[in-house]
Image (cartoon, rainbow, N blue to C red; front, side, top):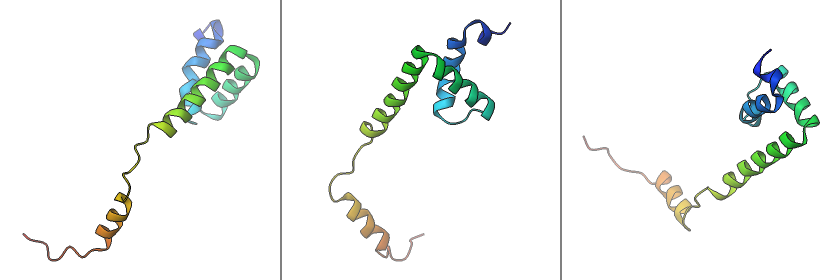
Length: 85
């Protein structure tokens, strides 16, 4: 008997991050989704992990200071002149 057969929640926990990253095989994805459909605990854990990823993605991004985007655009269009060797 494998570890997954002994504790399906532990197996689901191992598959959680790859599932969220969309890197599971089709069979693994179906297995994970079947377990999430049947297990309230793992489904709540999945929702937490998913919301945590959204929170980190939306709050951890450093915003550019005002005017920086325009300055960068000007640098791209400005002729730097001859390169010195």
